[in-house]
Image 1: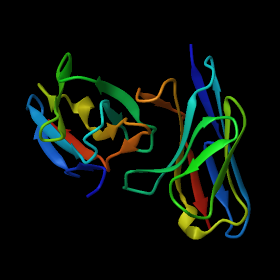
Image 2: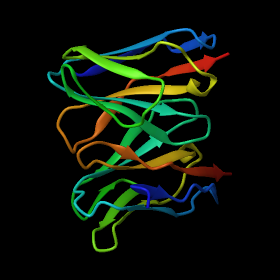
Image 3: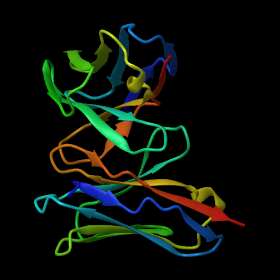
Length: 112
Length: 107
């Protein structure tokens, strides 16, 4: 069966520090991969979307970047964190376009 | 117009009540929709998929109205455990989430 792993679960980082969040999927090939951010009490904002290795669509211009170095690995990065980067970061995988997606357990990031 | 819009609620209902949420979408080409449930500080989990006119699973019924471009979720015989935020998703091309509707079921 397919599983998705996301880590760390919580993270506290100072302003200006770098960020790297990793997401990996097992049990499937060539998934579509997503990064979302959810601010406190708000909905899910789509950040990045990838249909294959090296293929990244950026949905919202901001202080973040994403990479997909391997088929089932999706990384979210920042060179310098801002206070506004705080939030709940969620990675999701989707087997085929237009079908449902499944989420990792998320990373709760607090920038101080 | 936002791609997916939901009434944020909260909906406060007693146990046993029937409650319905609506979700409107702007892309008329969309063919697939989903309802997710999200508990506080947890990841969203798939509740139902809606690919045609509707879907039913126990106490939950989802309906799609293409002419008016909305999806609904009906929950019958509400339980305390149904308290959560319900997210509507437009699955066309990429997954776009609504902001969610909060449901609180009280004794």
